[in-house]
Length: 223
Image 1 (cartoon, rainbow, N blue to C red):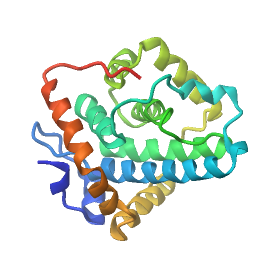
Image 2: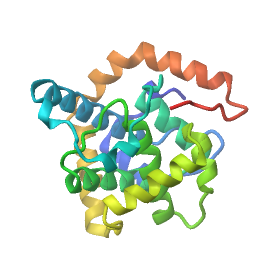
Image 3: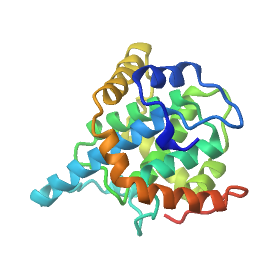
Image 4: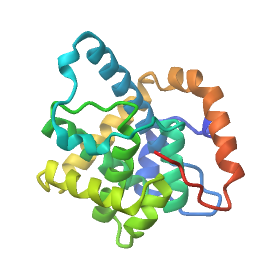
């Protein structure tokens, strides 16, 4: 089923997070679509801030590890769907990754998510969250292939991320619930989700078609 046909509701999101069923024909969990929308709006806000205040650019050389030389030709939602397709990381992993991204930005106030660092930050946080949440995980080398990176690049980003986070990876139940509630509010009030999906529709279809052509093998996405 295409993403545009997903049932958009807070109940659907919570159902995905707590009782997602892994079947060959399972749809993409709603949390992925909502997370993509939130990050895209955060990027748009950061672009406005940087445009008006050049001093707002990050001066911390450690966070530059997430910068890529060339902006990937893949939407955030398509990238998240790709990670889900090949890793089958559960919906709760994406909630924890969202917690990590928020903590990372708070711990490193000079860092701003943008088009050059978002993909690398996402695959790193999802991999780390998967190790925290899941009992069984793929190797870093596999996550690197899925994310379009070399194993060395992903290993370096994981290590830097852990130190920049000061190894504060624990997410208790109340924190997890609060972030779930935030995602639910994003769905219930619209949060720009429908508007952003409409604006991205043509680009999404094109990206999905390109992915489906190479579905039988993991294509390398050069970052």
